[in-house]
Each structure stands twice: as C-alpha cells, then as structure tokens.
Image (cartoon, rainbow, N blue to C red; front, top):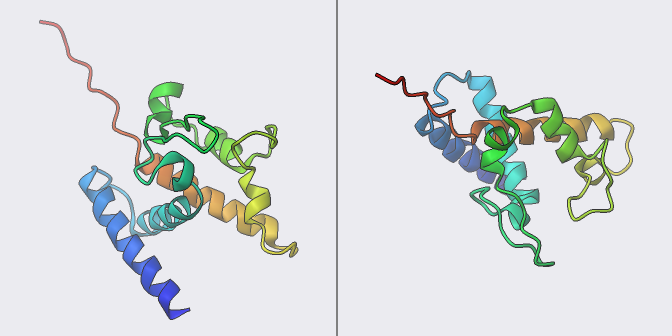
Length: 142
C-alpha cells in the first residue's frame, strides 16, 4: 500500500509540473489532481498501445494506435462526452482492438463497480484533455 501511495504521489507531482509547463496553469488544484490520477491510469492501461507520450504506437497486430494528443485537432474540438464513450466503450463494438474499459475497470462485480469504472474513465478523459495542444492562433492578414 505504501509503495502505491509513493508511486501515485510521484506520478501526480510529475504530471502537475508537466501540466503547468503546458499552459494549464488555469486548472484548479482539484482538476490537477484528477489529471494526475488520469495520467496514472493512462500509463497503466493505455500507454502499452498509445505510447507513454500518447503519440500513438504500433500494437502487436501491426495496427497503429491513434495519436491521442490530436483528438481536438481531428474532431475540431475536445468533446469529453464523446471521448468518454470511446474510452469506456458503452456505445461501440467491444470486439475491436480497443478494449471497453468500463468492463475492464469494474471492481470484481461489486455493485459500485460501474461508478468506480466511470470515475477512472473520467480521470482518463481529464488527462487526455490536458495533453491537447492549444488551438493555433489565427494570424490576421495585414
């Protein structure tokens, strides 16, 4: 248990520092904690396919996992509900290479397992939101 707390605190500290460096200094302390939690979950569950830096990687089946830092650029904006649905897998086919994380993250079939999984998906979404580059500033023509 102690080791888990130390690892979590270290990961949260690193993430908070990285988030501040990326211009997310407008986030509250609670939001930064959620982003840190999401990064921990990301590294545990997603980095294997999408790479630790979230820029995508080739999976074992020679499939290119998408670059998750470009969600907002690809979709025109970052829609947290759409991203949560994709991550959680509630409204898509779970027989693809992308797992349905809500099912994977449930705690041993307990009654609160669904809410527990949703909380983890929410943290992952907050982390993914934090790694989106800011929109390109439009340059006014003279």
